[in-house]
Length: 293
Length: 111
Image (tube, rainbow over all chains, first blue to last red; front, side, top):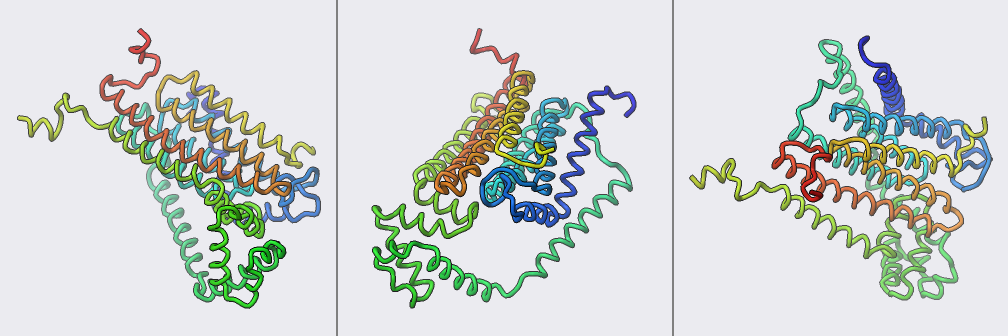
C-alpha cells in the first residue's frame, strides 16, 4: 500500500470512513432512529423535525445528516475516480444507501425503502452483471483474504441471523394486532375528518358501524368523481406526514394516470432492452449456428 | 457552530447540488460508458433529493404539495430503472459489435 499515489490513499481512507459510518448505522439503526426522534421531539423545531420551521438544535439529526452526506459525497467521488469498475459500483451502492438515509430524514420513508430496493438492489445488480459480462477487472478489488476474512464474514453472518431471529421472536399474534389497528383506524377517521363534510356525504351514522362498513361507505363516496379529492384528502390528512398511506392516497387518486403510465413505460423499456440486446440473427453464434449447420 | 447543528432546507439543497456536480464531472470526464451511466443515475438521485427537500419544506403548510413531491420522486425512480435497463442493453450491443465501450471512440454517427 505504500507505493500508492497520495490521492488514492486519501480516497481509500474516505471510503473506509464512509463504510465505517454505514456499519455503525447499519448495526444499530435504533441508535440513529432514537437520535433522530430526540431531535424531532425537542421543543425547538429543526428542518428535519415534524413541523417545518427554523432554528433549534438537533444534534442527533445534524450528526446523522453530516455522516450521510459524507457517505454520499465520498461514494460518488469513488464512482468517478476508480479505474476498477466493481469498486465504482460498490461506491455507488454506498451512495445509494446514504441517500436512502437522507430520504428517511426528510420523512419520505416509502421513498427510502424504494431507493434501497430499486437502486441498491435491482439497478446496481444489473450494472454488476453487465460489468462482469463485458469488462475484465483492471485489478482485483481490495478484500480481506484468508482466515481473517472468513472470520469477519462468519461474524457478519452470525450477527445477521441474530437480528433476524430477534425480529421473528418479537412477532406477536398478528390477528389481534390487526383487530386493534382496525379499531384505531376507525378512531382516527372519526376524530380527524371534517364532521361537516361527512355529514354532507351522509356518512355521519358511521359511529355505530363496524370498520368494514365505514370503509365501504367512504370508498363508495370516493368512487364519485366530484368528491374524489376532498374525501381522499380528508382521510389522508388524518395520517401523519410522510406515512405510506399518504403517498398511497396521492398516487392512487390524483396521480393515478402517471402511475399507470409508468407501468407502460417500464413494459416498453423491458421489451426494448430485450429487443436491443438480443443477438443478431445475421451473426451466427451458439445454438443458432449449430441449428443452421 | 449553528451552521453545523441547525439543519435547514439549504443543507439538503447544497448536498444535492454537490452530488449533481460530481455526476456531471463523471459524465464529462470519464470515457467508459458504464461509468457515464452511473454518473447519470447519480444526477437523477441528486434531483430527487432536491424534490424531496422541497416536499419536506412544504409539509405542514400544504400537505398536498408535499405528497406531490414524493409521488414525483417515485416516478423518477421508476423512469431511472427503465433508463438503466435500456442504456445497459445498448452498452452490451455496442460492446458486442465493437469490443469496447469507450464513448470517445463511438463516432460513427458523427463522421
